Image (tube, rainbow over all chains, first blue to last red; front, side, top):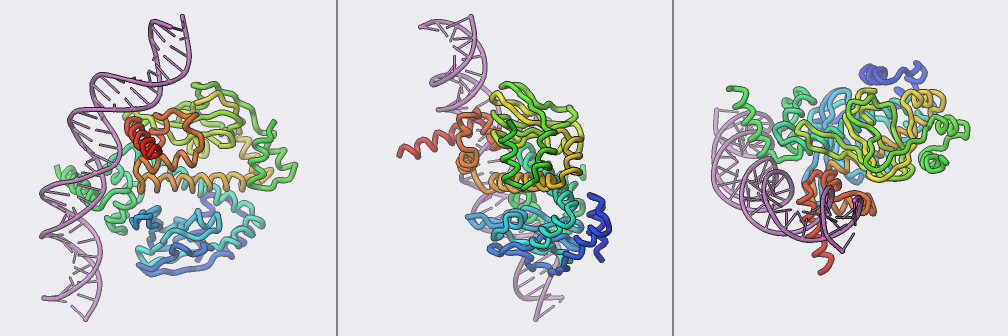
Length: 195
Length: 195
DNA sequence: CAATCTTATTGACCTATATCAATTAGGATA
DNA sequence: TATCCTAATTGATATAGGTCAATAAGATTG
């Protein structure tokens, strides 16, 4: 039942069976249907989530009320409001299911206990956050040095088949451009492919 | 001599004196003068650096040869090519001293030993990278939702007094805008202050 | 299979920022 | 202090992408 996350863990660290058990026994199963929210702004963030099945997005609304997508998550990704979770403050994110989703949640207090009892999991999360940091850095750079077309192509490569799972307006939003602009870029790309 | 970093560590974790000793004894002192490089592209990255004194910038050149600044570092900041260090691959960054600088370096292999002998330091770096991740996320969002003027004001707040230590063209570069644009923004802000 | 609702596309126009080219202002150096 | 040299500013113009409004194309539902 927890094989997906056990595999994910073993791809990053080598815990003993006892340590693995300590971690896995803290997890809880959660399901959300398409359109439902795992988290809304103002909530005290007690959990982070590992995606077993489905697709979700994390976003917030800025002062002008515009939406900004921070992250998509599909199978084998962690999703959450890392800032609010880490600092144990109220969330300012929405996490919404784009498809019906099954997840595993980890509770903040229980995670602190895991860190005491099985410190190897400090390493697991250190590695995950390091990877997230690096890929986020690439996102900043990409936004600075590339135009919409190149960023869209890059996005399609790093999230393969995502086009079929995520609406174009959400992709546009993630890239920080308007749906209209993305539409024109996609049109230009189609033309290129044909010729 | 190592009090600055010992303080920094103690602000994040509570190691035993023995653990602290293990960590501190792996550090080496490094000095670079203004204009000199701590790291250049193509180098195998063996170290990350903690700034005791001075100011540095980390940047890279994109395919068109344009420069992009990823990070400034001043006293009590860590700086390095985290991607290359973590993955133990060749760097693609320049790290250059903007002021004469004194640093402490930590070696990759020695850090792995520290992790084995004093696992509490997994936590130290997990916390640091988490904070870096969060502040980087704010940088992405800021670039998406704000114009140059608001981003410049935000920058001045998060790096206080940096104006006196960093050239405007480097600030502009960090913000992802041209020096000309930043100059106009600064002019507009001066007018506002006067009236 | 209509009717309705949502998403995507297209067109016309606008704006923030980039680009290119001078010019000015400060620091460093002789 | 005069001379360089680099950084900052200013002006004129170009452009990618935004905004607003109108269709068109898919989905979804009764």
